[in-house]
Length: 281
Image: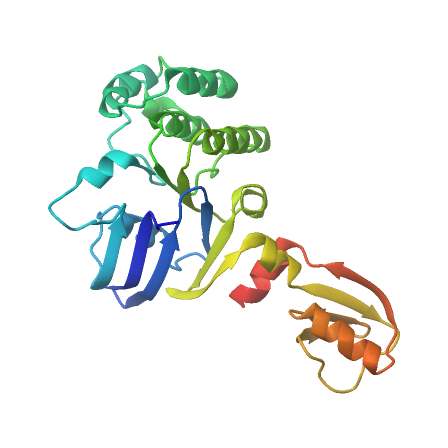
């Protein structure tokens, strides 16, 4: 399928911090999570996609159009929710809906009312008077009903309690099932990645570490418990303790152990959080 977001060899330098070069494609019908340590450049990437920050080199296209070009029609097809809403504090939830809804031809009032009810959001209070968690719930409730083709979310579950995170993830999955849509989000929450993401794009210190299909990545790492640890390094070996070995090529590891008569007590797939930690190291 054609890419809806195309990032090609994009670089940007900010106060000594070098981001990129980064290349990434986002296809319809997928959720991609940008994952990395604090300060790895994830939020800057989202701002460059929205043409809120300019890359020093490279090109970004959304729906086939360069984001820094004169034709800005692509923006009608994109919803962007930054970490902090700017300029909303003086408005109530009702005010914000009246301002935002008319801008989006496919605004879905039923989705808005359902999320307001699920999250129990008071629409008569000013945004600035709401707690950070309720502000985040209202922001999300104003994002999904826009029904745009592309949804870009910067830390969408930050400040949410566990029940609210689960409610939001259910709403997002249901929203994705209605039409061919694409989501790109940043998150530090492993549960967000596990439940939502189809793909992971890992970044560290401004550098891309890889673009992974989540299920393939999760299946590619295993821990082996052995009666006796072989002296030399094994195929796929990442680390070892007294009787445990972690491998990123479990088939090759298992084959080697079988061929060399090293009995395996047990094996277990690594949790996604541990895999991400290994890659970010």
